[in-house]
Length: 137
Image 1 (cartoon, rainbow, N blue to C red):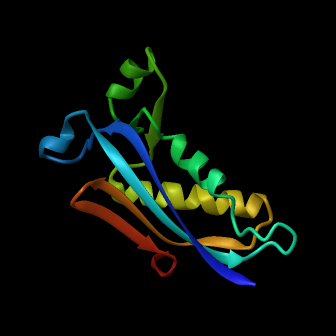
Image 2: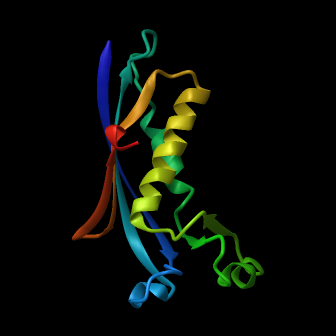
C-alpha cells in the first residue's frame, strides 16, 4: 500500500553566510522549523512507512550546533571549543533542505524502506523558508 506521511520538527542552531554581504555574514542563530513529506510503500508487517522518530533524529543532529561553510575561517577557531558542522557551501536554508532530505533518503535506502522525501521545507524564520520537492532534483 502506498502512503504519504508528514513530520514537523524544530532545531536551534547558529550559522553564518560567508559569501553574503549583509547581516547574515555575522554568526547568528535561528529556531529552524523543518517540514517533511515522505512517500512510499507501507511495511506490510509493521504498517509503518517511516518511523517518525527516525526523522526527528536526523533533525536532532543539527540541534544546538554551529553550522558553517567548510571554507569558513571560523571553523578551526570554534572547533577548538566545540564541534562544528560543516557544509560544502554556505549553510543557507536552501542547502539545509538538501542535506536533511539526502540524510532521510539515505536512511530509507540503508533500511531497505521503499520511501523517499517527496517535499521538504526548512523555515529560517516565521516568514522565510526554502522548499524542495522530489521533482526539483
